[in-house]
Image 1 (cartoon, helix red, strand yellow):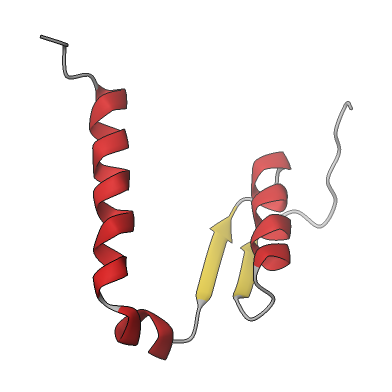
Image 2 (tube, one colour; image 1 turned 90 degrees about the horizontal axis):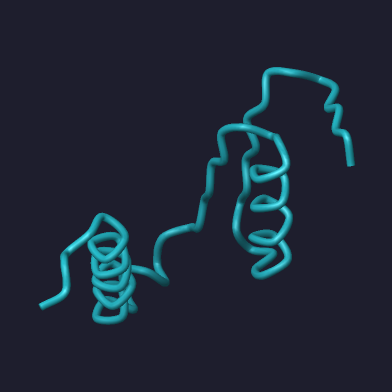
Length: 73
């Protein structure tokens, strides 16, 4: 028997959450889509970019307190 780790739990929970939305297309389609991303670092900016590219009808809000961003790459 395989040990039930945190990683396995998150896989199962994520899959269950994704599948649960398939049963309610009227509810999912009726609401306006809004996403709030906290943190405009590499991960936050990339997530905001690709969410917007995937579906331009989604309202993406990126919250970042700094006006400038520095990176070493």
